[in-house]
Image (cartoon, rainbow, N blue to C red; front, side, top):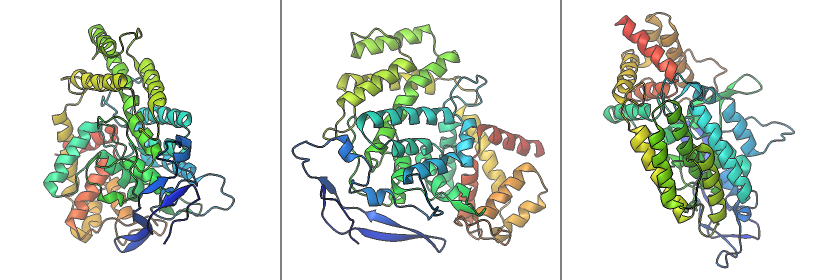
Length: 448
């Protein structure tokens, strides 16, 4: 199959497509390897970000809009593919739950401190602004940003570490939130269609790729997107490859821009950072930008980073910063690690306490495993909010006699497989809010 292209672009070889199957269900045709594409005039440096934007004129377009699973066809649809994806993400339970998931400080009493959803909206705002200034596809950028953290566990990165330890011990695929975000939007989160049937989100490749490859922890300046479309499930570690689109690169960098200043602001509100810390941060700023005279806060850092990025980025160099600003960003990040993220007593729940909560929940639900009879075993346990909700989870995502007709989402667990069941428990825990995880833990401990 050949990819149609306009006269503006060149492509070298035919495109290979491959069908993937999950539990015997063919869901989609995914381009496994897209050939390197090139812009005419690239050597002369005559192209701009508008030429590279993810539009119908981009040679990557056919890959970018391929959906993981089919979605309902609507007559007279007025939205673009990426706008539909944005709406599909925003109206899921997973998006709602981010309101009660940790950004940095779990179970914080201060309502003015960021939650996971606050962070997501801030990344979206910054990323869309950058895309607009560069001339990229704002809808794609916003959609990636809206979904990029939807797979975060309860208690933020601490919960992520807890789940990773369990997965490693149990012989399951490594848990990292970027990959879990992809798993959430591909296989777990659903929406009702106009007939009341539950369907998978079926997002486009460009959005899914941006979500998986948003890791902003790699300290690299001037990032360019990769040329090839690959099987996203072949990516095994965060930061292994760059995003497929320039819009994905923008989100990756916006993630870091969004959290650096806001984490300083949140830590200051909670008394973790003091006036002395503020003086030290200003010294870091002066070291890299001697003529600067403003405070190191969220407002000034976002303004500085965004303006510098827009002025210094180009398709030829990549998206990045001037050297002084890039070094400033890395120094502030290092300062935050030492004085916020790794500081003892900065959080109400320690890593060991987080491990205890998540390990207890995991062992509790695993204890109900009886193969194909697990759902019946959960029913015998007696009706309560926690066992009932987990039982509903298994009914929705496994092959079983209780699964109603309205569930047309992909079956992802075989209850005859103990490993599948372990993954089901991990998936269930990863979707919990902080509060629900605490409630579940307390319920378990009360019965012991």
